[in-house]
Image (tube, rainbow, N blue to C red; front, top):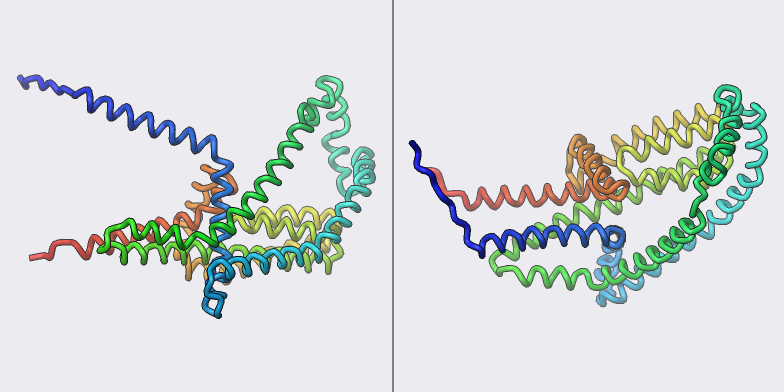
Length: 353
């Protein structure tokens, strides 16, 4: 018989394990509570990485003070956004007003089975279903109006606070980012600093290049879409182009979602416009997938298409749209760390006899 083996754990070991478990649980709880603030931090980091090349360019061109270079970059970025707003916002507001004014006509056509949306009434009897739901559950239940005013007010306040916080946080990251990075490097052993400086530069190049390139691709997608919609006479072209630019920020899936949405709107306007818009999106996605994205991702992130897809799916599952946006730079950073670990392991491996 095998003799029984008695394992005794000291009270100190048990308490240490319990302390670790409690610390991990508290950390996860804090992360969950502060998830919105952490999302603002992530957005600020992306914006700072996108603006940092301009700051460094000004420093190389004679503005040696980091503060002045960051301030000049920030002012130019704000002026750029204001210029876009002055150019497009009036048109966007007019188009939204036109849509609101035409909304009663759309509702009238829908309830009477006319127009391009009339099939919803003739085939699915939308009006009868809504009337039945109102009688059985009330308008508040149908439209979800319980507490809607409070929810809208909270949403608006959150957006305003988030925008102001992100603006200031991004500026401070631009201003103090190199100082904090240098403090991190100085805390490391002297012999390992060159290695981790190289790793940090590779991660910065990966994330910064991806963020800048993704913003540029989204602007191209939104701008070209707006031009095509204006040429085809589709209403609300600027607003729809803005939606395309925002959706195109989501890698892989965003462009497809935008194509489906804008294609439906174009077909509702006219069949020729719908055909042209669908053909445009098919051609543009080929250019974006085979020219624009490979140039950006190939030079910065250096991930295979399969790795990109898996990263996006995991990121979207963990944190929704923000997770999908951050998935590729995170995966690229992990790849940099993995390659450095392998190279470091080969350098210190014992020589074969």
